[in-house]
Image (cartoon, rainbow, N blue to C red; front, side):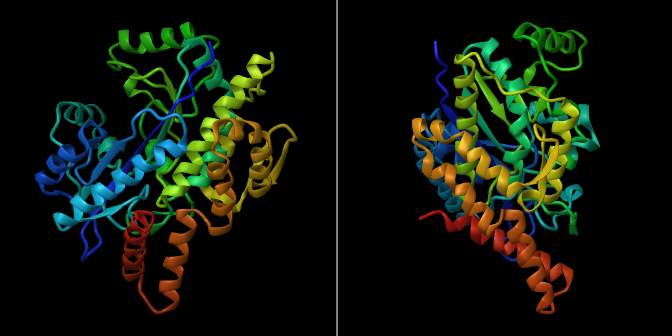
Length: 376
């Protein structure tokens, strides 16, 4: 039976003060209560009180997910403004300090705080996760092994975290550098079968290290809750259309790998160390640099790799009806990712005479305004 290849998108946002544009460390309790009343189970708190997470229902295509994302962002923006807050979609805040934040009072988060200590307390980062439905566990693990190749390509398009705690970090996605302080993160290992994956998982559970698979935080993982393969490497996109593009590309990659398997073909699996090197290049340079073409053994400008990826996925984009979302990757290249635009705002503010604190505030203001730009 062919996998459903359904899609679901999760995004994490930040709550910002409209005057200082700093994060709101302790937002009113009514914000989450009203959000729950409006969106139900589609909205959840995050570890830090200044964060909020949404998740779409199961959708067939990114086009079907679009109105849900618009409605969720618009609703949270409206409720935030009602409480004197603003909504920001970015993987890091330009200048907020992690040690000034408060974590949510909930049993799961209390346990995480107890287990992880300072590592979890500095997780002032937001991400975008995309689920694609693959019901057969053996197929799910096989596709996971092959799909790791494409993770750096997706990360580069999503970058939105060039600043951290009032510092320019010299990379387009410093979020992953922070997240990698957690255990069980990064590029997943290769598994010969679903049973081998389960054996490793059960080893950790039996040893008392973790309770279940939800505490495995790889860049790509079998979901602990759904029969899906969950892509977790990407930053959250400030522009909604960028998020839909990345979700569409990921869904097309899943379909392409399933299509190859049905023809007794597969994507070549490269050593994890090589994929990790591309991951670092994507973190460091985003779309403005190069990745290693692992087949040709040479660094290739990212723009050329995107064109190659669009060619490979053309049949799948047509079959899924997401050609428009997929070719939006060219718009991201032309316009720059959120990280590129943040850096431009920061540098332009400096050129106009702003000091660093003023320039960071301009970036935060820009992010709030751009988050709202796609919400008619």
